[in-house]
Length: 366
Image (cartoon, rainbow, N blue to C red; front, top):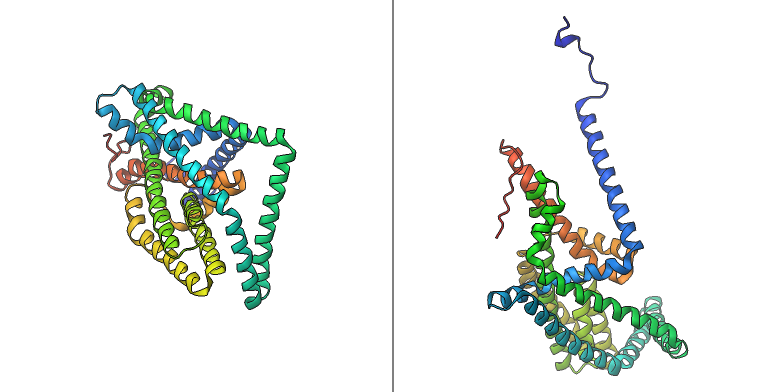
C-alpha cells in the first residue's frame, strides 16, 4: 500500500498552475467579449437602438416610477413619459439646431481668425489650427453640396436616423412598461441555482447605468448653463450654440469638456480679443473646477467609481469600434461592467476573506 509520500509530484508548482488557470480564464473572457463585440457590429442596426433605449430607460425610469406611484397605469405612464421626452428633446433639438445654423458660420470664421492669429505668434502650431478650421469649413460646404446634389443619399441617411430614433423610442416605451417583469424574465432565463446571482448582477449593472445617465445629464446641464451664461455676459458670438456643444460633449467624459471648452475659448479669442479670450478661459476653468470638486463627487456617489485611465481607454475603444456613437456608449457600458464586477466581488471575495461560504450578496433588493 503506497504512502502519500510515494505519489508523484505535480509537474508545475502551485503558483504556476494558478497563473495558468487565471490566464485561461482571461483568454476565455476575452474571446467571449470579442465575439460579443463582433456580433454587435454585425447587427448594429438592431443593437444600436436597443442600447440607446436602455440608456433612455435608465434616464427616464424615475419619472415613470413616480407616475406609477401616483396611481397612473403602467402603460399610460410609459406613454406620458415618452411623449414628454419627445416634446422636450424635440424642442431642445429645434432650438439648438436653429442656434447652430445661425451661428455656425460665425463660429467657423472665428476659429479661422484664431488660427491666423496663432499662426502669427506660434508659427506651425497656429498654422495647423488654421488649416483645420479652413478644412472644416470646406468639409461643411462639400457636405452641403453633396446633400443638395444627391438628394436620395441624403434622404436615406436622414430616414435611417429617424427610423433608429423611432425604434429606440418604441423600445423605451416597452422597457418602461414591462420593467416590473424584467426580474422574472431574467430568473426564467438563468439556471435555477444562479437566479439570485443573475438578478443581483442585473440590478447592479442597471443601477450603475442609471446613476451615470442621471448624473451626467445633470452635470451637462449645469455646465452648459454656466458656460453659456458666461459667454453671453462676455458677448461671445454663438454663445447658445457653444453652450449646446458643451451639453452634448459632456456625455464623453474628460475629452468632451476639453474640446468644447477649447472651441469656446478660441471663438472668444478670435472675435473679442485676448482679454475676452482670457476671461472665457477663466469661465471654462471655473466651471470645470465646480464640476470636478462639487458635481462629480455627487455623480460618483450614485454610480460605480472608475479611474480616469479606465474611462479614457473605454472611450478610445468605443471610438475604434463605432466612432462617435461608440464614444457615447462606451462609458455607461463600462459602468455596467464595473457594477457586475463589484457585485461578484461582494458575493464571492468578501465571504471568502471572512471565512464564510460564498453565494450570498451584500446587495439588498429594494
